[in-house]
Length: 238
Ligand SMILES: [Mg+2]
Image 1 (tube, rainbow, N blue to C red):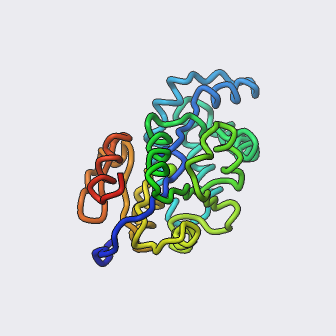
Image 2 (cartoon, rainbow, N blue to C red):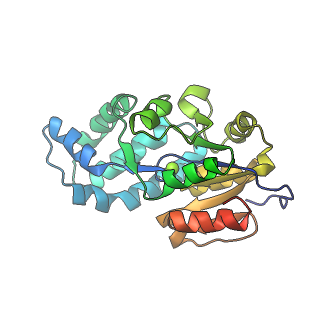
Image 3 (cartoon, rainbow, N blue to C red):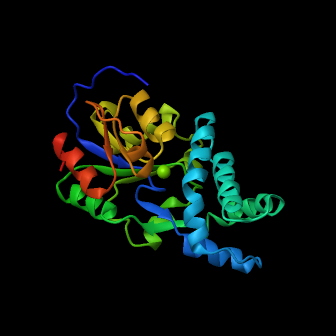
């Protein structure tokens, strides 16, 4: 994805939610599966995550949230040892539970703290997520609503990343131009390509970024909160 160099000063930050602020709570998932009579160990779920995320990445460009989500979950469950004919109905059940029992709720070390630090410095900060329409409730439930001026949830808006419309909506809600926003996220397709197409700078966060390093004037890579902060400092934001 190429885009013209961004001349505007960075003034605002958006965070993706899943695998950026909060990660899959594999212990909770193991407990949910136990409710359905399945014994799936946390370690097996952890080990199955990387290939399941690669599968997600292959389809997220097609748009929407439910289909990539269920494919991720089916791939994860099968990778953790659940039979294929059982994984499909389980993924559908978990999807239906997701608005009230969100499985992505384990804070990633340092990321909410970084959002709070930015807000304390007067930087407008938002969440920009492909979610199920109840993300604001989850963030409130886990006690981290305060730093965020806006929470943009694809399930409420009816448009999902990587569609540039959701990035433009987030920038408007933060009172800035897209060229003034740095977006932080873990999905190469949904977050990084989506943000760049909308004219934002981007920080590619997490393990996948480590596997495919790319660092330039408009895209930084960061494996942890400290590296995200360093990239924001480079752009005059932290
Ligand atoms: Mg994500």
